[in-house]
Amino acid sequence: MTAELQVLAALADPTRWQLLDRLAGRREATATVLATDLPVTRQAVVKHLAVLERAGLVAAHRKGREVQYEVRAERLDETARWMAAAARRWDDRLALIKHLAEQDPAE
Amino acid sequence: MTAELQVLAALADPTRWQLLDRLAGRREATATVLATDLPVTRQAVVKHLAVLERAGLVAAHRKGREVQYEVRAERLDETARWMAAAARRWDDRLALIKHLAEQDPAE
DNA sequence: GCAATGCGCAACCCCAGGGTTGCACATTTT
DNA sequence: AAAATGTGCAACCCTGGGGTTGCGCATTGC
Image 1: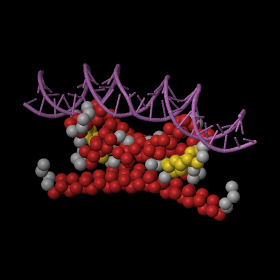
Image 2 (image 1 turned 60 degrees about the horizontal axis):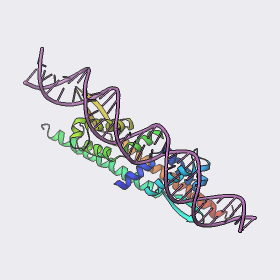
Image 3 (image 1 turned 90 degrees about the horizontal axis):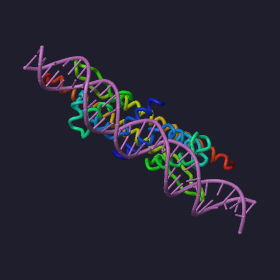
Image 4 (image 1 turned 120 degrees about the horizontal axis):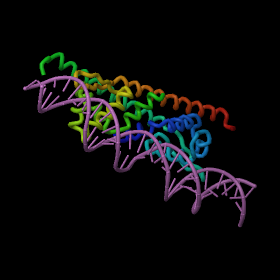
């Protein structure tokens, strides 16, 4: 579960969504390029990409002196499913409790 | 979108997941009660619950001198769907780019 | 009416993390 | 080989947020 928390934490930042957006529209890009149309430094972008990579939301591969990043949509989808499952578990538990309460008004 | 970010930020904390878990198993509980089986102060719990409430993940209603909190599974489910949709958009865009690249090898 | 119980508020500590700058190192390019 | 370009590393600043303690206020119980 800590892995999913890592994803959520990574996604809980507007700048990182902007990065992911740019990446999804470009298939791959370097930190330097991404930094050009964002209001932050290249170094800031690098740090954000590192966070996203640790979370599995982007992948990096070196090409000569450049480092190309690409988005990993599967990871996002995975996490979405995980959350949906959690929501379902909550619902089930609440339904059970409600059911028990109706059946046995005492307690 | 900032609303969803609020949810994600709220979920990016293990203690808050513990709270949500306890709540889902109990239907409703007060901060004081929740604090008893967590390794943090009641005040800390109160703060966490405030964050969760702002995100729409729990709802609070006063009952005399107590404040009962209950979990809102729909909000989690909503956010999960939203993320799944984002993942799909990424996929579509990447597929489009790939398609264009095949069709027009130049560029 | 008085003690007990449950909340709310405010001040404070501490550190993770978003952001910056400066510079050294590697790789292209000409 | 020299200049240009792209990364990496390290130190640093500063705000946000998780956590605590202390106390005052309301509600309930006896």
